[in-house]
Image 1: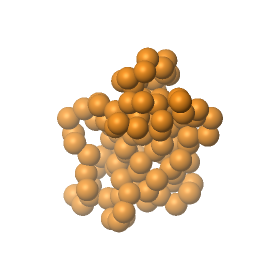
Image 2: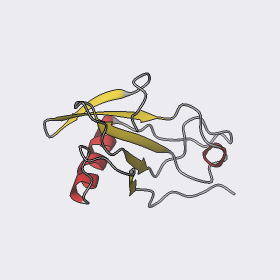
Image 3: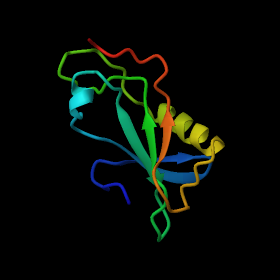
Image 4: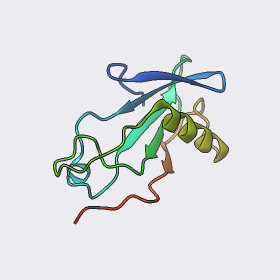
Length: 111
C-alpha cells in the first residue's frame, strides 16, 4: 500500500525522507467533528512499499462541516509524530499492516 504522490508533501526527519498526506475531504465522522483528523506517512525512497503510518491528531479536520476552528497540521507536528512512532516500533521499510499512532489526547468531539 502506498500514498498517492499527488497532494503529498515531503519531509526529512533525522536524515530519512518521508511523504505525508492529509485526506482532502473529511470522512462523515470527521466532517461532524465526532472524530479527529488523521494523516498518513510513508518512507519516500525505496523500491518496495513499506508500512504506512496513520497518525490520529488532536485536531478537527480543517474542512469540517460545523465550522469548528482548527489549527493546521504543520511539518513540526508531522516530524514529532514520526519520531514518536519510530520510538514505538514503526519501521517504514518493513511491509505489513498500517501502524497507528494515537495522538488524539485532548480532542473534544462536538455534540
